Image 1: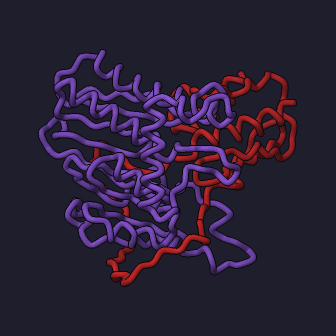
Image 2: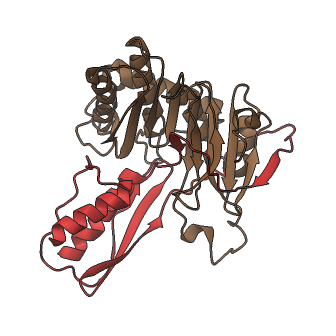
Length: 250
Length: 125
């Protein structure tokens, strides 16, 4: 099995292939992330999104990739009842909430097109698996504990579906608000969504996390999606079909 | 030497291993770090702002924490759930099974590094 990690878009991106593969194919998949970063990074003054936000490019002049991501963002805004919104309060556009998984989906499509069947792509904890792992067993995805980064709290076999987690893994002052000590104790720390593919899982994980405690109910109402939501008390709420993907504790 | 240590520290903080950051981190000069507490700038991490605060004591970086990070709630938008099903709950427990991949939130890493770099720059000025 070949497994490679690079830092792109400010996050570790891993591609693993459990069959014969040319290095060039893996490089091309990584290049799709680099290309997405060059276009969509709000941290690069010269990116297409930055030039659009600065008024140097009009919407009609944007490349098809940006139109595609904007369309996905607007669709997600509608489907999430406005909880997801790529427009910041100052009017700037920031579709980063979707760009990551859009790039994973493109990389996965490239690997499939190259004839590969057994692989995974992971960008900052959002994952798409395909086929089986090197020893022929299903790929297993662990859900990272928001309390201890080195621990996992759930093991999944997503069987080709996408898995995405939204949330904050840094615990800090906001959990203990001195002015309202009770108020934030049950805050949602993370929500992991299993969806038809990584792009769908991420779109809805992003929206669900913005909803707070209702996020898991939002996912419950979506056909084809499951979720595992962890709160600051160390309790999790599961959608009704989540257990289908769970590997029993050992 | 100090510069190397700072850069390695930055990378470890950001990624947990020695990867190269694409984001430009201002180089920390060999001059001693000034004692004090320094706040980095506030950076967008999609769900909201991230801000890092560092503390330098005896010329050494002794702490580094996020004082602001995404805690986004659009409370003005309400959702009409006609009937909220009662969903199963459980206490989270650590699992020991072997996995190839880990899913977790890493949304804020770039904003975190940008703010940390700001704070470090202030400490060496």
